[in-house]
Length: 419
Image (cartoon, rainbow, N blue to C red; front, top):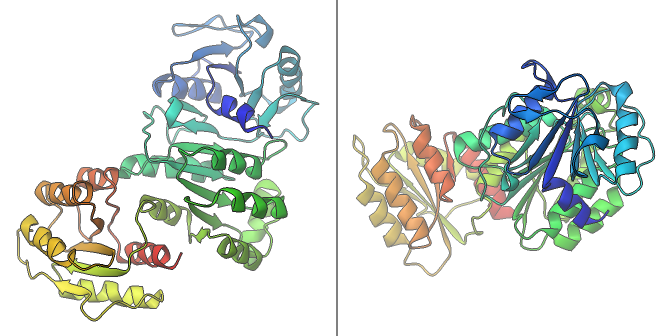
């Protein structure tokens, strides 16, 4: 598949919504409203032969009545109407379509055109301010970009849930592509596209199956250098595998085979969908030579060291540094002094800042961001009782991955070290 063609589809200058609606409870309204409220600056053409206007937008009766050949057609129509509009799009020379319709079993011939779906929740491309999804989870959100994180998902619901969580926590997803039933464009196609764009520094995969296994392995090998790759494979259990078949018709396959492929290709294995995002939050961290846990609770620092040992990461005897700053407040200078003191070693150091009891303060957050950006320190924050989501988001936005659960922090750190 031409990456140039897929790039045009995912970064369209013009979009037609086939099945656009003025009714707020219809998918044809939600996808149009998402597109407008997301700040998309391209040309938007609602298509519906039964209405004349939706808000300030003129509605056209068909694709052929539009003033131009659009880059992308979003099809939000009943399944029986899909073949006809795809045939029309092919005749006009429309390069791409995303089909959200459920129940489409076969596509008409579509040479020169690539199709995402059917049964796709849509495309979310923050770089183009393109929220072209039927999702109410991210309905009306303003896309944020700059993370370099791409999510390629075989589940639409999970995909948009991770986009929303990323926005809420300050670790946004730049691009989400839900491949749906993959009657044309499949996961390997979008993986090859994502792998050719240097802006995509982290590629996350949410998998039910890989249909072209050998090509998948060969493709990963071409562009894995310098990138962060992580995947979660669902259907690992007998019940999960059976559910995957009923969900999309996917043959889930033996997880041990997938696990072997992932490990051989340097893909970090996530344990769940939200673990995938937790890993991505730390994708810019360099692999350390040693770790110091700077904590205001000796017990919590020891527990984190134990969890890391359970993950196969044994720390040095002096790794847990009890700063003794209980009770309140959390003095930023205490953490700054400790980080500067332990930075004098020649090894590459990862500092895990643990705060228990007091919530994060704006002064401490400012100090940690400065240490990260100005002095190049590698820092992870574990704030067990943080109550201020804005401060957590601020740290994540500035490349200081922040977690509120011991297990999440330990799991991420361990897999970063062992990759």
